[in-house]
Length: 74
Image 1 (cartoon, rainbow, N blue to C red):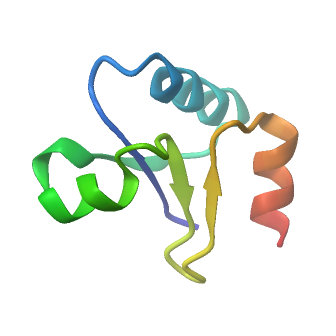
Image 2 (cartoon, one colour):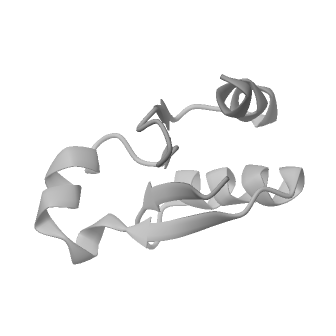
């Protein structure tokens, strides 16, 4: 399953979220919200956000490896 991780540069929480995904061996497309005004408006104060394109479900920070596993099993 392809996942999307919304974030931005110089975001320590986004770095932590990427680390969780790497630790689980889960690939995700990283999208920097600063490159798109609509995405910035939508996610600006919510990042990092993990999104499932198949269902549109979103997992907002804070999350850990267990929460990601539950999110993917849903």
